Image (cartoon, rainbow, N blue to C red; front, side, top):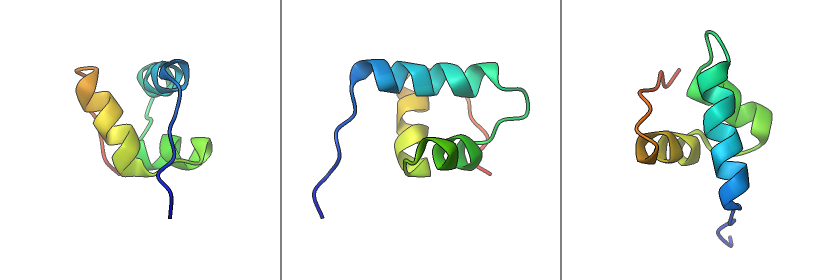
Length: 54
Protein backbone atom coordinates (compact mmCIF):
# COMPACT_ATOMS: atom_id res chain seq x y z
CA UNK A 1 0.00 0.00 0.00
CA UNK A 2 1.33 3.45 -0.89
CA UNK A 3 2.04 5.85 1.92
CA UNK A 4 -0.28 8.85 1.95
CA UNK A 5 1.15 12.34 2.14
CA UNK A 6 -0.65 15.19 3.82
CA UNK A 7 -0.13 18.90 3.30
CA UNK A 8 1.48 20.98 6.00
CA UNK A 9 -1.80 22.90 6.28
CA UNK A 10 -3.76 19.68 6.90
CA UNK A 11 -1.27 18.66 9.58
CA UNK A 12 -1.49 22.04 11.32
CA UNK A 13 -5.28 21.99 11.14
CA UNK A 14 -5.40 18.48 12.61
CA UNK A 15 -3.16 19.52 15.52
CA UNK A 16 -5.24 22.65 16.11
CA UNK A 17 -8.47 20.62 16.01
CA UNK A 18 -7.07 18.32 18.70
CA UNK A 19 -5.92 21.27 20.82
CA UNK A 20 -9.22 23.12 20.54
CA UNK A 21 -11.60 20.21 21.14
CA UNK A 22 -12.40 19.68 24.84
CA UNK A 23 -12.09 16.02 25.83
CA UNK A 24 -10.59 15.08 22.47
CA UNK A 25 -8.71 11.83 22.04
CA UNK A 26 -6.18 10.98 19.36
CA UNK A 27 -8.27 8.01 18.27
CA UNK A 28 -11.43 10.12 18.01
CA UNK A 29 -9.90 13.01 16.07
CA UNK A 30 -7.93 10.68 13.79
CA UNK A 31 -11.09 8.72 13.03
CA UNK A 32 -12.98 11.91 12.24
CA UNK A 33 -10.23 12.98 9.84
CA UNK A 34 -9.80 9.55 8.25
CA UNK A 35 -6.17 9.15 9.29
CA UNK A 36 -4.33 6.64 11.45
CA UNK A 37 -4.06 7.50 15.14
CA UNK A 38 -0.30 6.91 15.03
CA UNK A 39 -0.01 9.53 12.31
CA UNK A 40 -1.85 12.13 14.38
CA UNK A 41 0.19 11.18 17.45
CA UNK A 42 3.40 11.83 15.53
CA UNK A 43 2.15 15.23 14.37
CA UNK A 44 1.16 16.15 17.93
CA UNK A 45 4.54 15.05 19.27
CA UNK A 46 6.32 17.10 16.59
CA UNK A 47 4.21 20.11 17.61
CA UNK A 48 5.05 19.59 21.28
CA UNK A 49 1.48 18.73 22.26
CA UNK A 50 0.83 16.21 25.04
CA UNK A 51 -1.91 13.83 23.94
CA UNK A 52 -4.38 11.27 25.24
CA UNK A 53 -4.15 8.16 23.01
CA UNK A 54 -7.60 6.73 23.73
